[in-house]
Length: 127
Image 1: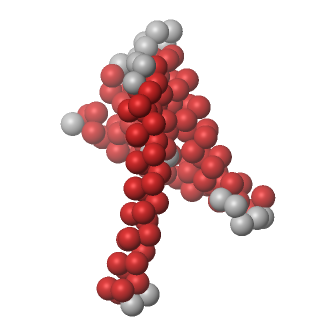
Image 2 (image 1 turned 180 degrees about the vertical axis):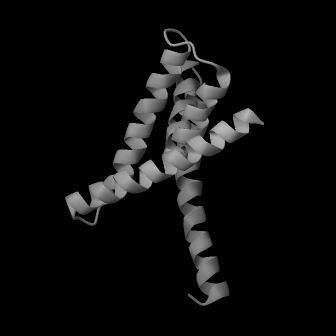
């Protein structure tokens, strides 16, 4: 139960950080490209890679705190970081085809689902 509580708290913190950093970056850049989201996704990938390596060797911390940071805070910050870590693990294990399929399906199916969801909402809800 304590692990779930820590993940819950971490998720809230990560979500607030994502909202603040993404909004601040988009306001600063002032363009139409989602630079804030890109910054959040890239920094989340950098952080999850760094912390995963650090926690597996140099910085040994209790499992519940590791989960609070990696699953909670970074999961709330960006799920793209988890996608990056899982794809990296496939590449690192020599499973290049699976890594490519993961990237392709995540992007293609993800984008298609955004479109389907949008169309469903517009047709069902009349928005």
